[in-house]
Image 1 (tube, rainbow, N blue to C red):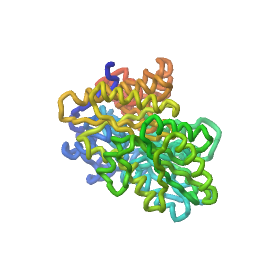
Image 2 (image 1 turned 90 degrees about the vertical axis):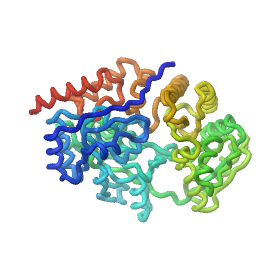
Image 3 (image 1 turned 180 degrees about the vertical axis):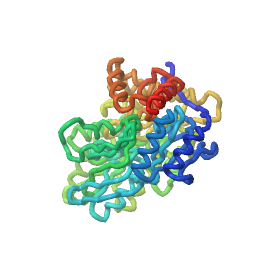
Image 4 (image 1 turned 90 degrees about the horizontal axis):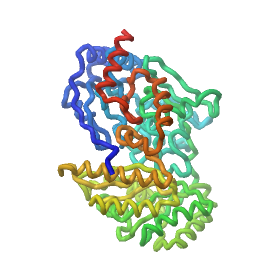
Length: 490
């Protein structure tokens, strides 16, 4: 099967002096990077693709973002928003060069309204920092990607990020009430922060748009009450099919835990080497990590119901965290799984397919077949409760041709996900990684409709060009379109 993805490494020319002078006037000399050595730090995110920007700029206010976007239009260069750079699909990479707008200085929590259970934040606020800030009021922000101690809320909105607790609480779009964003001509637009407000749901449209419609400069997000009680279980299995069947069994029984995570043996080995104190069972074929939250008086009954399902599906051992410290260790192991791969492999490539829960066993078996066929170790650690897979393909990028083989294997996994009625991405976004794979799911009319919507917001291909949708033209043609736009705006 030919690969529908490609690793891109592009070298850009230095930014025009007039553009750099504009940017320095807007934010100050200290907040513009243009030296090639500095730009190297911004040529990648958490994916395998690379491309150099022409400049990186660090705005501190919405007005500065406006001026930067207007400057980009004037000079005919793209503008790419970037949060913490933890994305896994190349979404924050300046594929066609231009200006990277790093929002790390816009990191203020502007308001916490506990009465209405909401907060107003800037895009550079780190995900976990919002929950740490609101914990004293008895609230937290529910979406919890594994990178939550580094990733920012602006990036979460761009990719519609999820996390282990998506099963009960939903993804980012379920917790963003309204946004402020800068349009391609530098205007500031604010969407309604009222639930079920009249008119088009522009807030929902922006969640997952990956910076192709505009740059978010402020967001109103929903807070949830911190649960009164939490019960965390770790169940071990001697076979992957039995572990997979337990996931379906729990949901079929009408039980909705806050989280159901699955790790296979290779993932367990990596985590055990990285965080031995997590004390994970490395001899198990797979484990399930489950959170159940609610009123303490009800937790015993819910735990008993889950135990019955786990034991009926051949769980060999069920451990319950005895205190917060043990619970946090279980979750530290799970959330460190990606980083732990460095213990067993020089490089990894992660996929993000979504499948029906009832097909987990079949798809994992197909992934094992792909692993053998391509001679690549593949570790599996994922959100089993909502069928969001994260197979980690382990390889050594120093070996010539190895990356191409990995990308072909990744394509084969995506095809399996689509064949069982699944989707290309659950939370990492399409970016440049999967844009050529979009026709696996969408027909020409579907893609054309999406392209028309994108052009309404960005007719001159200014914002994060050549992402998400299969590109009808290359970067050279996109640059010609932008040059034409800049001449018109002048």
